[in-house]
Amino acid sequence: MGGCISIQILGDSDHIRNLEKNLVALEETIRVLKSRRYDVLRRVQEEEGKGQQRLNEVQVWLTSVQTIENHFDDLNITRTRELQRLCLLGVCSKNVKSSFHYGRRVSLMLKEVESLISNGVFEVVAAEPPAMRCVVEERPLQPVIFGRETMLEKAWNRLMDEETQTVGLYGMGGVGKTTLLTQINNKLCDGVDGVQIVIWVVVSSDLRVEEIQDDIAEKLGLHGEEWDWKDKRHKAYDIQARMKNKKFVLLLDNIWRKVDLEDIGVPFPTRENGCKVVFTTRSREVCGYMGVDDPMEVQCLTDSAAWDLFKKKVGPLTLKSHPRILEQARKVAEKCGGLPLALSVIGETMSCKKTIKEWDLAVEDFAGMDDQILPILKYSYDNLKGKHIKSCFQYCSLFPEDYLIEKEKLIDYWICERFIGENEDRERTVNQGYGIIATLVSSCLLLEEGSSISKVKMHDVVREMALGISSDFGKKREKCIVRAGVGLSKVPKVEKWSAVERIVPN
Ligand SMILES: Nc1ncnc2c1ncn2[C@@H]1O[C@H](COP(=O)(O)OP(=O)(O)OP(=O)(O)O)[C@@H](O)[C@H]1O
Ligand SMILES: [Mg+2]
Image (cartoon, rainbow, N blue to C red):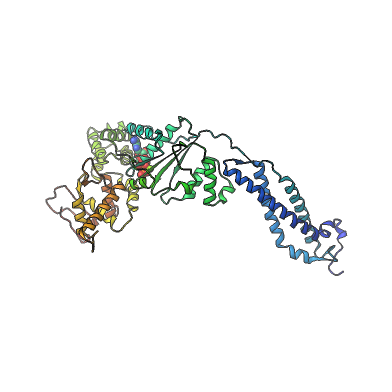
């Protein structure tokens, strides 16, 4: 008998003797199971498409089927080798131990598959999801918000207006858009008639649809392995199924380009479904892309609100620690031009400065701007797309602080600098110039002040940012020295004149 040992010795011969027969049976039952799974899954998806939620017992069954199918594939890998080991018309093996184990796996799996087939008959596969409570997560907010009562009321009324489906809030970096949106979110916590879901999503600058989908899904209770495996399109189906027939408010913070709701799976807000979308952006143009013709601008704080915010941040103890500090503090606050970001950051930085010397220095240097505020604002600059537009923007920082720049003159300067208009006729070049101004205004890097539409100005803090970029935020101080509007009567003090490439007389 050579290497063949009688299997009777081991006492349990069935696993080997029936191996071939069991394998054939297993293949057949697996085929039946697969088609059963296919049918069940089709019914489940059909129901989910109608907004139903799959039953847990169905999900457990589907997962078990998937697992056993994977095990069957593993088993198949050694199938041929195990069959070749059989001898004596299949009742013996050249490697009894291996054949025994293999045969036992096959017969156990066969039983399991048969049981899954008989358990896979479902009269109902899905049911109405549990009634969704209106869950709004309260978001953290500064303890005191200054000077935003009117704006909040205006934005809230707009949101509650039946005729409004999408509200766009735009404004320069750090002006308080997220803060306003947070106020709206927290006001929604008090409950608004009929609203069932309030979802807050922070949109990343590179706008990844799947990230937005995952955020929304989490709030909707869609997660787990199965969700993770789905592609963008199927995720959109699931979100759509959950959100349709529900009254929702979707809050999208900080968008930089159009967010396509259909791509995400969010049903379009209409008057009929009562759903709303509110978003914030630094760009007015983006509001247009989102279908909002009359967006609301979040503007800098008034002088008195700005001073209140600054005072609060610095704290009364510091302000009282020297008789001249209050006066200097006012000057620093003024330099922030009503920008809450600057007021908050600089106010906090100065809260521990109790000597007048430190305050005198702050008036000169505008403490805290370089490392904390300018990089945030620079993001708007980095996002400027188009030839020479960045140079055109930086050019505006050569004008003195708060200077109202005539658009037509500005365009002439740009032409002289050859930023625009090379090989073009004058009319086209001027139009190009106006186009650039419009883009800069739309990105909130230039401001169109009051009634004068023929002039623009640069916010002080934005101007600091533009100058910061020119000198690589202080690393190359001599690269750009601007002393505009200070009435220079002599050449300014410069350490390294050899680094200076050009002087522009004012
Ligand atoms: N009215 C306010 N009162 C007090 N603090 C405020 C006010 N508005 C904004 N802030 C504070 O100013 C900082 C910047 O505000 P916020 O983040 O809302 O600006 P943003 O417009 O969303 O900026 P970005 O364009 O960078 O997203 C935050 O620290 C915020 O707490
Ligand atoms: Mg923000």
